Length: 267
Image (cartoon, rainbow, N blue to C red; front, side, top):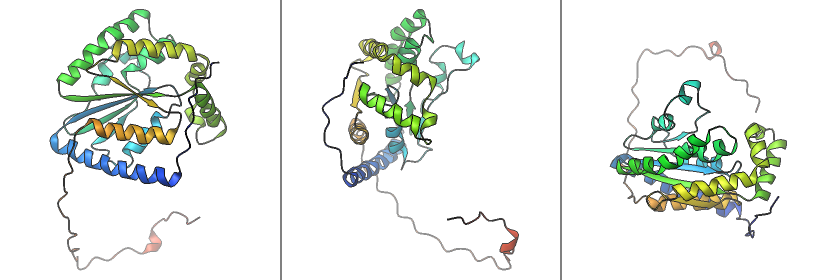
């Protein structure tokens, strides 16, 4: 196995990381309100090797946002019916309406990397995808969708470290799948598939932005900061809200507390 690890920077202090994250999350809220007010349609694609940190970054982006405006799409493997459909069809149905942001935790690019390496698609299906994808994305952009694509890059050493952590941590064990095990064995094949995918789909109109993800905290901050820089937005001052007086309903008698079933207070 080749060691592609990069020169490590000093780890960010937890306090600094949390302060910067909070600042960025406040800006994300401002962006969210701008997207809603302007009726923008935003799609952000997150791709990368297994354990590259996509999910953690997506979680930090959505943590403070309204799920009715910003939603995550992480599609399961296609059903028998979906396998007979046009490949992009099941993704198209999850695209945003006006005033929405959709974050794809893996996307149609599954075909270019995972399906290609794992032989889940035929050669004809693979090459048809590479020919069709740039045209599809141009259509999406022409329709008014803001399309942003991130590739999370992680070294072999760091991926191995994260996989081992998943195996011994009961809260992360569910993240490790048979596909993860195979992907670990097929590092070079994944590299070739990614390079070929970039050759066809890293276009001027719809470029790939690569996130150095060996350091999770830096990757999250860098990705969120970059995302904010790509969509011009303005702060919309919210209207002041005052709580009204509670209505006093005369004659209401609350049932005895003893008739309710409470959760045991263990803590």
